[in-house]
Image (cartoon, rainbow, N blue to C red; front, side):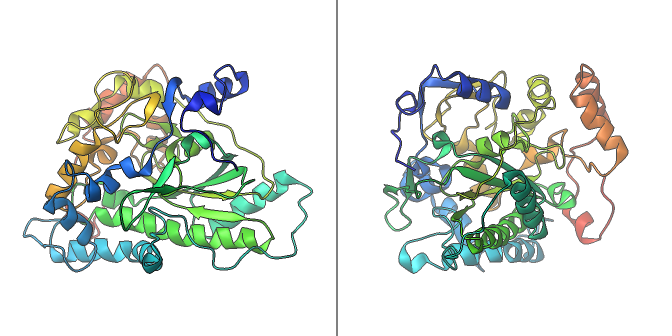
Length: 404
């Protein structure tokens, strides 16, 4: 897989009808000024090198996953809340730290290191459809809730990675020939998400990251045991949101999240780059774009007003926005600044989203269906009128009380 230039038209001609049609199916609008994203410009990397973002509060936020958190008297931010959140993160943090002496932060700045290399004997794959079904079955056995497959798309691969020692750019090299990407979704606890913002609710994110760290490691090694290459990836290496959309797992929403039919926005995503012969899924549309066009609940509820009002636009407020893609784009500086003041993540935008529902219930499935029709304004009005998306007191989760 050769290194591609940073400027999009040089590596993918704009008159490529096949790519244009694929982008339309996924809901993408990629312009001629597109540039691949440097991981060094994501807001979490910038917190360590960019003086406009780097603050004592930001550094304290990152230290808080250990025992350095400062418990408060407020419900949801007490010692047991931070204790649960940090315990939920522990597996992901262990993976991230295991190769720090070697300058790697697996799952965040760097992909997972392989436990064993590919087997010398390669399993012959006569039927890629059957192999795809097997891989999806194994992924679910290892803990994935959603699984899709898409083609390697160099546009979404980081132009460079971030060196965790110097926070300078370093090469983002992938082996040649990893033409398939397995994208996995990991559902988050509905009851915990209802308690955002709180340290308690942050346990839902931690469980997602820890769960995906294990699932990615296991499925990657399964593929290598078949004799094929597999690079396991979480937040590192490439932007997972466009890959998840291309793999048919959901649609992009105003709140910057992939909205899925199964969990709404309540999903973490991971991915594996591989040369195992697989068939690709197609993007799936079920009315999210149309609904988000008339709904601004996430933007209205955002305390720092970091989410966009109005239609999608090209570019964003600062260098943490990708260039040349027309989409809804958050002001990451405002968002992260609010996180650091709370010393925990926020995700109010996830909680209030009308797609954040327990879809095991028939009534909620009906609401999802209405959101994809011309009755979407009725669904939105009912959602607000009936109080869905309102914060549930964190103590409710601790007492084991019911969910809406």
